[in-house]
Image (cartoon, rainbow, N blue to C red; front, top):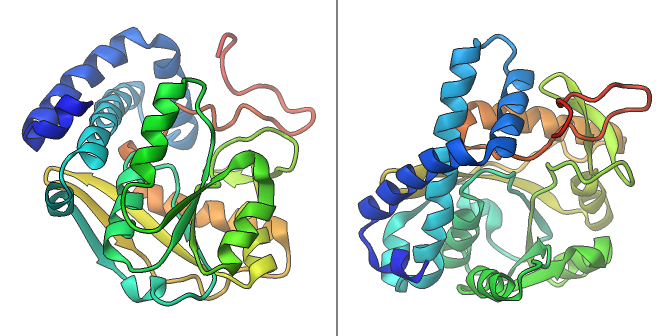
Length: 283
């Protein structure tokens, strides 16, 4: 990864293309998960379309992973030249409680770096400690490299997030994965009931924070990080309805670049009571 920081971007992306094609062949379980997810969310597509989309997804996944080499290791001028922050930047100015809805697109770490470099305010993000100590140190250092950053360990729950918001930090939150049955609600995701944590709605209600969506898009030049206008009608009066609305708006975001969403996660592993599994045995 240190070597990736020194190479031209075209070389990094070329190596990522090759690595992604190799992983698509070798990492059979994740390939099957991604295909299952894609077929469930886009049932109108043919088996050939699903295979091609997932192969492209693996290439983009590998490219985005290798990009962390220069994101977290290249000089600041190089990083700035490859990150293009656009959109409603005014939504992030000041110190009002702000939740940044940053779903699991492959460029999520590029989005965090772009905001830290381009917006003058503290940022915080929820963080899961890594099993490998060396990887954990590298990841923490990378995510805290620019700006005024704070990492909140997931085990701290809502308390740490609320404290950061009330202290004036904008919270970069990714509440779109299946975290299990406990604490989740079942709301539609591409028409399928999906266990979804209602953290975004609860934090918005607890802290009166506005919700600002951010989309991080991998491009040939690096990344375009787009800040969208704050949601004016969020939260409402019902947590489950708010969480369903979050997923609905996430779907629209995904449809702008479906192959750059994180499809290798078992998004539908937790099923409503009495519902059969959606993944083949062994996944």
